[in-house]
Amino acid sequence: MKRILLSLVLLATNFVAANAQTVIYVDADATGNNDGSSWANAYTSPKTALDSNTVIGAEVWIAEGTYTPPGINDYFILRLGEKLYGGFDGTETTRDQRDPEAHVTILSGDIDGDDASGNYSNNAYKLVYVETNTPGVPDEVLIVDGITFYGAYSTWGSGAAFGANQGIIGSKELRINNCTFDQNVCYYAPAFNFRSAADSQLVTVTNCIFSNNRYLTGYVFELVVATQTSGSKQAIIANNLFIDNYKFSTSTFNSVAFIDINTPSTYSVQFTNNTFVIDSTVANGSTMPGIIKVRSSQVNGDVVLDFDNNLFYTADSTNFTLVQDIGSFPSTSYTNSSNTNNGGNWSGLSVLSNSVIDTVNSPFLDFANGDYRPTTTYNIQGDVNSYDTNWSAFDLAGESRVNPYSGSIAIGAYEYVSCMPTSATILQVACLEYTSPSGKVWNATGTYFDTIQNACGLDSLMRFEILIALNPTVTVAPSGTVLMANQGLATYQWYDCATNQPISGATDQTFQPTQTGDYAVEVTLDSCTALSDCHNVVVTGVNDLKKASNLNIYPNPADNIITVKHELSSNLEVSIYTVTGAQVSSTIVSGNTNTIDVSALPAGYYILKAKAGNLEHVEKLIIQ
Image 1 (cartoon, rainbow, N blue to C red):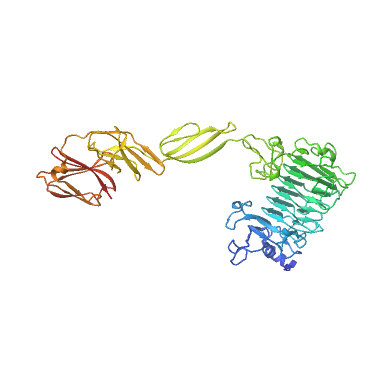
Image 2: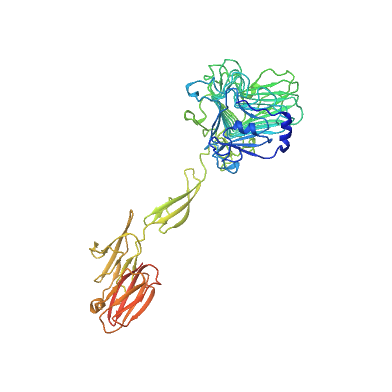
């Protein structure tokens, strides 16, 4: 689809609201109005979103999914300094709610979906094109964050994944954060290029992965300072992984970056905490004369490089050179004393004070399986003063960039904190008691804290949420002759402690012995079983009221009313107790048949005691 070009008249009219903060939503699955006003009404393509935008500096939020240009000669165009953010699931209301690792946003050149078969020639030749001469936009900041650029394929130019077609960009700043550039192909710079003529310039590339990008004779990315002399020019490359990027041809150009200054000023470029994996055997066996290419195209154009805490791994120690001059004016001053770790000339940069070039053994924990965290040899070797946490407080894996426990910093893109204090919350269900790792014993449900030492000898704070499942205790009724297990909703078996034998039929929650002795109950709940202590019961010679008076108390269980019926000529005293012994009711029954109102009693188990003279009867009463 041919992009609609707005005339300069329309641009002047529509850009009155320049720099107003606008969020434009993109979601391939949106089914609403598709006008970009919300997630429900999101555009389904970044191209439509960008072509329809009229607000300078608008934020384009792109939900997870894969998005391709309409054709191999088409691309997504930044013409108003838009900021591209990926990693959304399509429900977020603020940018910090997104998770680019969990919700991957891919801008892909694989239009026909046939890269798996090895066919790349029909891929889009560029993914994001930065328009170079839009009126009113030169000072805008370009941002790409949380996006994977995959599969751009071009045999000419540069900036296949992101950038301009060798043109000069007016924007003053480029920020590339949390991005992946994978399997992009271009003549010079398949990942990105930034060729700016702004007075003050800043490029930051942090927490990105550059992998499997191929170039015919060039480099992964390109930075060019053009035309202007005033203002600072600076680039910061930090916490990035460069791996398996290589060239097709055997040309001497075989570098990660090309840095060029085309004006008589100074370009300061900082490489800090990056990991470079360079395997010359992948690049058709060609030599590797320089990882960083530099050139000054103007007299007194000065490139000042600073390398700190970087980790280089290559099997080709003979051909390894870190920086190569590729044709600067002989009078330029970029090899002066302002350069850090350069030894006075570019070739001397192969000797670094706080970076490592390892050409013998893998410096990674598990190189074969893609674990590029440094071994213990290197995980505290970096210079912490060389790193500015304003660049990023986290390493490429999301760990704290500076070890919060030791204050040290590793070399390379990843930290490896092998020993640190720990903390944890443990939810534990125990039958009767729980013993913590330190030996403390808890036998009641509750929250407890304990401090133990981990394998490193450091304190670890443990929070224990303990649930004691079983309560094998017994309550003795006020009469002293009824026993009740305090654990409800369980299975019960009463025992005679004299013989340690179960009592046949005694499987209720309550038990009234018929003879003096010691008794206990075995309580089983789920997988927990426990035996209570023994309790002594004295059965006296008091005549039983129930037999003597033909006593009948009903219903049991009861709801609101119980009826007491007997054949005595005297009154009865009927008392009701809780299982803990508190009296809750006392009634004098004057006739042979009477009722007692129990509607005010909460549902549960009670002990009912009836007495007349020296006659007495005790039984369990259930209120429901």
